[in-house]
Amino acid sequence: MKKNYSDKSPFFVLFVSFVVIKKVKGAGGIARFHGRDAHGTGETDRCHPGTPSPLLLFLPLHGYNEFMPIEADGLILREQAEAREDLMLAPEAARSANSRGRQRPEVPCPFRTDFQRDRDRILHSKSFRRLAGKTQVFVSPRTDHDRTRLTHSLEVCQVARTVARVLRLNEDLTEAIALGHDLGHSAFGHAGEKALDAVYREFVPQAHFHHAEQSLRMVDLLERDGRGLNLTWEVRNGIVHHSKGEADWPQQIGWKAATLEGQLVALCDRIAYSSHDIDDAMRAGLLTLDQFPAFIVNRLGTTHSARLTAMVGDIISASADLYFIRMTPEMTDITNELKNFMYLNLYLSRSMAPRVRRSVDDTITGLFRHYMEHPLEAELAADSSVPVRARLVCDLIAGMTDDYARHAWRQTKRKKT
Image (cartoon, rainbow, N blue to C red; front, side, top):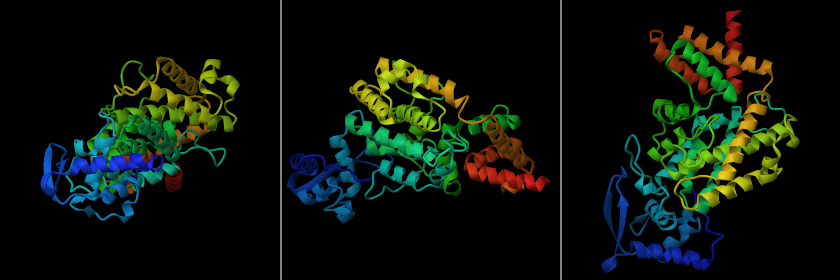
């Protein structure tokens, strides 16, 4: 993804360009660049003949990478991007050059950082495309405007990148985590997740299903016909640690993710769904503003835009020291109360009619039991053990869209009659 510095003055861009030039310039016409080896485990010194011209370093800052050669006077574009990260990001931000690496070593991309490469792999994955057919809150949307799991992920990404840009965190890492955080979510939203967890435990009592863990399993093992996406450790850590469930956001400590970017996505996930689910529920006539506690409306406003502005501004203000990502105590209390209100008045009660909830349970449970009894229909080995088979059936159903799961269950019922 290209950085956009169009809002900066020409003097700022020239300053950055020449600082980068000075950074890579060495004695005797030799440009020395201090990079990282492919595993992110130590520094390597690379000597490049010649000094990059001001124009070669100026053009990428303005997003004209399509006109750039892969290698410019010995300094490849990825290393230029890494140098810009080192120059422009906050000291506490994650650097792609310092990544803990991938599970399987790879030759680095010549023009993308590792985090940019991860983002692209997620964006082009099958599991990302399937999010368009998975429920966010409403299993049977009342209008064409209700969110899906895909649009939710995009909104989380937009909110998180806005904050990351202001705090000078790594936007590419933030974007990769945000786009990938729900790749393992089941069909039918949290109702589907609960149904899948329950039926999985029927066959393996000690097992469980959780969408954050399934998202990690998706990028590690299930994508690319079992090869996985081989993402960096930082992206994987942010994905698996994004979910908070019904827990309150903590006051004094950061969320579980190891990077500030991962903590940011976890918080922006909550504020994004808290606000846009209100938007969808009000459009559907399930909630009205006068039902909300007055102190929440007074502080957050009455529109989706106002709510996001209030919460994003608070995160930026409270997290400016970059010790960990947080809100002010006042906004933390308000956000937690809003979450409690939404669970009580929407998620657990009115987000779907009882008959729809029964249909979700029947579909997920029926498919799981059928595939366990008839593994060949799921293209599974007939002689596999119960725990192994249950794990694979869980993977299969978790990957289905709402419509595909309904279709598969209708086909299954026809076979039985």
